Amino acid sequence: MNPVRNPQAEPPLLDIRGLSKHFGSGPHPVRAVSDVSFSIARGETLGLVGESGSGKSTIGRLITRLLDPNAGQMLYQDSQQGQTDLAALSAAAYRPLRARLQIIFQDPYASLNPRMRIRQVLGEALDTHGLARGAAREPRIQALLQQVGLRPEHADRLPHEFSGGQRQRIGIARALAVEPEFIVADEPLSALDVSIQAQVVNLLGDLKEQLGLTLLFISHDLDVVEYLCDRVVVLYLGRVMEMAPTATLYSRSRHPYTQALLAAAPVLDPMQRRTIIPLKGDLPSPAHPPSGCVFRTRCPQAEARCAESATPLREVSAGHWTACWRE
Ligand code: ADP
Ligand code: MG
Image 1 (spheres, helix red, strand yellow):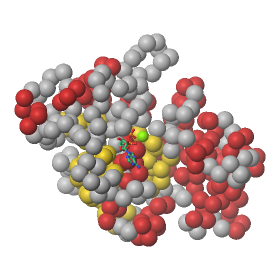
Image 2: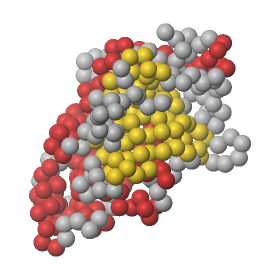
Image 3: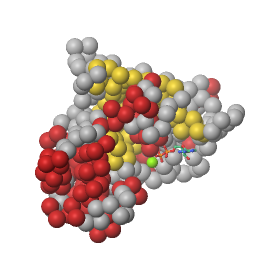
């Protein structure tokens, strides 16, 4: 179900196939992620969008193995170990890869120990992977601070002495400390003032270029996604509804869900950005998803056949996939 690729081209850095994650047991577990497939090329920035509860964070946590999947493959082209299925690795076998795949969260404050100075925060990240020991330590910490636009003296401060934007810079520095090649950024701007968001977006964009990073950018800000991402995957109730190169998705979306998201996004004044707001009608429970196409209960164009079977993703133009029958 992945986009057809040029066989001569390099395989994707990460190729996710049939990924599923259920929470709870019994007859009706919460199906947070169901049979999701997409890939990310090396150096690409892939946007992951969808309403709250659509499974975005769960996917980010599966990739970084903070959660274990129920099914599926996550084929990773590791620079040292060759192709590895992240889904099949034990926690112990995944550990060395943790330096390669890092995650940045919405609220870095929640994951910073309030009593640890930033030097210690970054030092701990370096220690975990045996990097920059002894005399190499302080220069590496200074380089990281500089890389994310913080000053040398910030190393001596505690998390509460920073603004929200600065704390997100610390979160980014901590992720970069271990020299990752793949970063999952899970709504990294949501806790920041609008005036600060642009700075952090620019920082992420610059770092990506400088360090050749690959980025999975989870966001509900449709403008930032359009600005930053090369391609976008649209999720609904744990399933991929549509994926396409960014310009294609924003100008010629084919799936009624994507169209509804783009139409619902308010553009009130030029300073206000388009964000994903919940559509009218209730989001079905992921423990009791509708039969057939899961979007059909809120789809303005649903037909009888939509209830009968799930609509497989099909490619409508190069790299543009939609899970809808409609032409
Ligand atoms: P998003 O990031 O798109 O808002 P999430 O991945 O956080 O969505 O959640 C997807 C679904 O999985 C939601 O219905 C959420 O309530 C559920 N979920 C997430 N984590 C857990 C968990 N640890 N236990 C039970 N349900 C969960
Ligand atoms: Mg989330």
